[in-house]
Image (cartoon, rainbow, N blue to C red; front, side):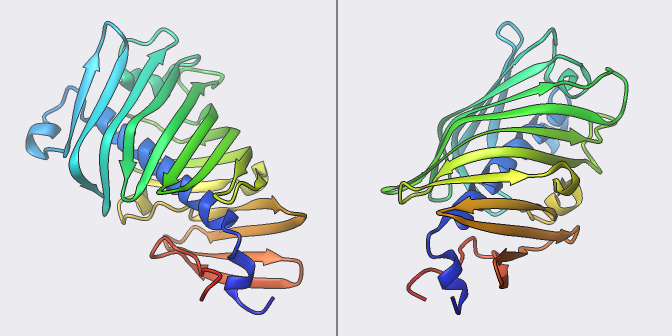
Length: 263
């Protein structure tokens, strides 16, 4: 193993990371749509999607226009969020213990990726009033396709956030748990994130269009190999370090692509 291409030619790291980026992007768009509900923000800063809240069905639908550019990514299709657990508004979800939401992707596309599957998020905090919230995040049959290639994931995670109000300014999310995936080549892999090295996503990085974790570590197991993917100590950038056995390399994911086998 003498180059990045040797370490990444199977695609498991790149595909799992791309899934993370698109899932975090979708969650962030949902956050921003909730903040804009019942405010003048849509009139003053119109979005390239239509946000529809149906109180009878407890359903929030985000319908993206063609070529809806958000954080330099083109979006189309719909994200549909259905709420339960005794809430009467999406803004109540982050604060109400027992509240649940279901996120479905309907003909959803980001750049060249089609996206399918369902996410569930449940507020499992011990109180409705504490600032630090705890959630259970489940991902079921999440599929990302690009032409004839398809990557799939199932996982269950614990997620914390420091939501103190309805603005999300200063929001930080930490996530840990386990997932299983299938690469575009049809090969299985497993990912584990430990609580003491949870993945960190911050509003600060989001405002700079950084969608990767800025801190934490994944342990990815694939074809008998164990790879440690470390995202650093909080800087908003696209680089991370990968270790496998005695090999270690720092990778820049700025263009969304890791070195390929041909390079």
